[in-house]
Length: 299
Image (cartoon, rainbow, N blue to C red):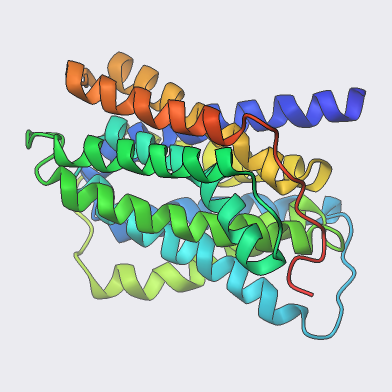
């Protein structure tokens, strides 16, 4: 179906943009305090949404939705970006990207506990295999200039992935009544208000900024906050959330590619073996296909 094909293409593009965001964050963090970087991308995204507000689309508020909307924004961007910022100060972009391969299995586990869905034994086996691979990848990571404390950084990235799991489940619940534009804009607005005091309370801005630092923040605001989240939210609104989250398996591939091309990062042979174990677990978990998550997952 054309609509399904278009949603698939949107998700692939979203993963490419998200994969590149690890590199953009690394470049931005080299010049700017992390909270100012996150605030900057949120503020730029908010400005874009305000200028385009007339094309906001569907809004069908129901009593009690405010709780889900606030929880959605609390998961992403608030907590997710805090953990991601901490992660990228301690680990490499390529290793952080690998940890995100756990997201599809975590969504399935969330569906099991919240929906009491039956999950095949191969899914549980795949989850365990991918988790072992992710832990192995973290434990064998060696400290260097791009990853001074990989174990700690990968742990922070895992916490970010947990936030992304909750976000994905909540998103499916809300996209029945709200357009992807409205949900993405709400994330940007709340994120701007949330990160401004954190930025002001932290390190001050440097006296001078290079073009690279400014361009990295602009890229994060325009192409990642607006583009990637908008594309992902649209894809989730058209496909089952468990299927849409499966596209995050592409994140490590894009991250490794961009990290090698732009940052000169590389993995050792043992790290590639651990990464292969993560992918094997992901593939095993999807062997019998994903069970669609019903729209009313929180009902």
